Length: 105
Image (tube, rainbow, N blue to C red):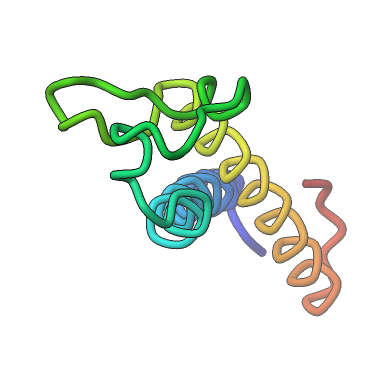
């Protein structure tokens, strides 16, 4: 039988892992797909839309290249944490079924 503290630790670990994975996917995969040429924004070739302005900031300190905004990082972290929480619940429920325990997640 799994101890309640261990179950809570597994859920917390799944949430943290989900958030970290979501941030890594956002930075390494989605951003290059959304912004293939960051120089286009400071040259005036690309126009920043409303959604773009919410999720990306353009500062002079970075050469007017788009950078992730705080909103982008918060939304990504919340989404990844929620996904990790759901995956953790599914894994714990499947473990409970296989071991014959009837503990609610």
